[in-house]
Length: 165
Image 1: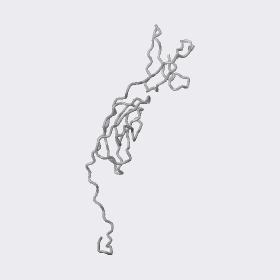
Image 2: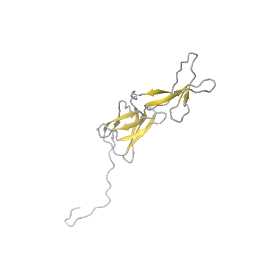
Image 3: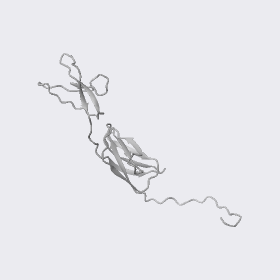
Image 4: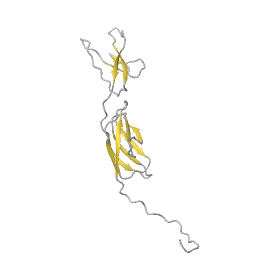
């Protein structure tokens, strides 16, 4: 038994049916919603016609974790953590319910999301959306800037004609 998940006509995952013809085939990577051809090949190498296995993923990814929220010297903020591998991780910074910045979690689920504009103190929802468009619950990334800005630097003073500077 085998299944072709990338459409190249070659089985990407295979297993052997038991003496009653029963089988279980585990695909270890996320599949997009759709149909995938499953074929059986006998001990002589003869392959029968394909039967399509339908995939309809409606399972929400778990909420992403937020590890560190770092304010960078250039005014940007970096949010790191973990989410479902391959999911799109996003943050909504203006409260409209739409992610303003996104990135993709790597094969281990790690992500690093850079927000290029300064963020005010507060909490910002971070979500993960899987390859089938299922968005899980949000986890808030807390921004707390307690650093005072640098003192202004006066580079020059000018005395005006009326005596003011």
